[in-house]
Length: 185
Ligand SMILES: [Zn+2]
Image (cartoon, rainbow, N blue to C red; front, side):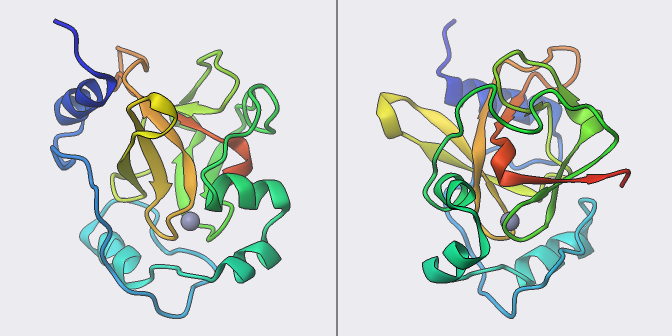
């Protein structure tokens, strides 16, 4: 039976992430307060989720432009994609945590990184199910699942159902430029 990529992702997510919502999140809730310099959420716990919801980061386009490089702004705030095999993190495998380049929320860790050969850093899962949100993306004539930072809504990349079958079966294909690696965390 052929499944759309979106349906496959949902089925795999349901199978491998028992605590994960069965349906993808299409709407965002929450209001902003003063943006924290660093997110306190390090693991998926009720406290971490509440912290993430309370500390949603919202900035104006001018504020993001002032904070980010032009390429970081294009990818994270305008849903761009860096050229394959161009990013800093596509082949690195140092021990540490990958944070959101916009709000510094921890998003992925290198233990879940694998070499997909696709030219972008790939992970089989996020750092806790509330680190990222997933949205249906119908752009460019494809149906894909967009991955954004749950904290500041930065575009990170997409998730595909062709990850390692021995773990989650998912491939979080993430732009290096949307990440900031913290060595040794
Ligand atoms: Zn963020």
